[in-house]
Length: 301
Ligand code: NAI
Image 1 (cartoon, rainbow, N blue to C red):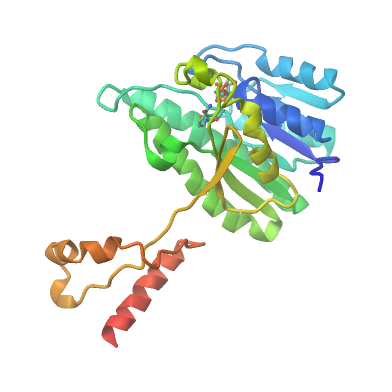
Image 2 (cartoon, rainbow, N blue to C red; image 1 turned 180 degrees about the vertical axis):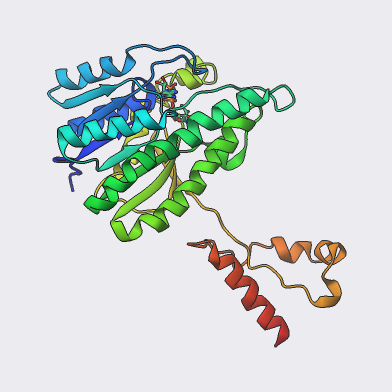
């Protein structure tokens, strides 16, 4: 089965380099008209350049169709303008890949509140702003494929990235609710947690690993997750040609009887509370309270 984006319009944020550029090139090669958004700043988010324009030139040279946008994803008005211009030119927006991001790594002890807020602003608020800008259009046309970009840091933690981790897990949370709210409008929303050799990770991978984690090897998952037959609400890790799913699960849990409903009771039942036998993956938040009620009823009976 060939995955085609013929007659589809896609916006990829932060597509002036790294992963975003690969996604934009792949989408264009498959027939999508692509908006290449990128502020063109440095890794810490300072400065500007014409990075987006260069990727548009690459796409056009390969026979594809693209337009550039150099605005910051944190600017709601400019993102709305970008979407309006896209709809005017190409008649809709079917795909949004929220990929733009910056780093301000430091141990939490040394991290300024300003650096915490800035990283959350670009990754989390920026993705919400871009998604908000396309949401009504996607609802009206009853078609939308949205991809958020999380990270192993958000899912599992990493020293020196408290700001980044908070934003990245926030994006997985945003995905879950948008998947629920978008369902009746055929809007599907997923999260990717990539691993790739880009300027963001240039000081992490040793020389011996050169090419192993090429960003092109992440693109297959991103492209599938914004395709017509994409699943929804998934969190998929991708890097070096390796793909896996990550789940937010819930243990079976325990309802404590009245006499043990105190901190000592929680301590005494800790092993049962955290026992992974019968663990499930809820599809909506309400399943937590339903489980609580079911356990209480079982306790009463
Ligand atoms: P990158 O630095 O090459 O790409 C990020 C792009 O976002 C840059 O081109 C940058 O100019 C752009 N950008 C930054 N702030 C922006 C803003 N306010 N508005 C518009 N564009 C902006 O790095 P990479 O690795 O390609 O990162 C892409 C995404 O993947 C990021 O969200 C990153 O956090 C995420 N990621 C990357 C991993 C990796 O191993 N490379 C691991 C986990 C997540």
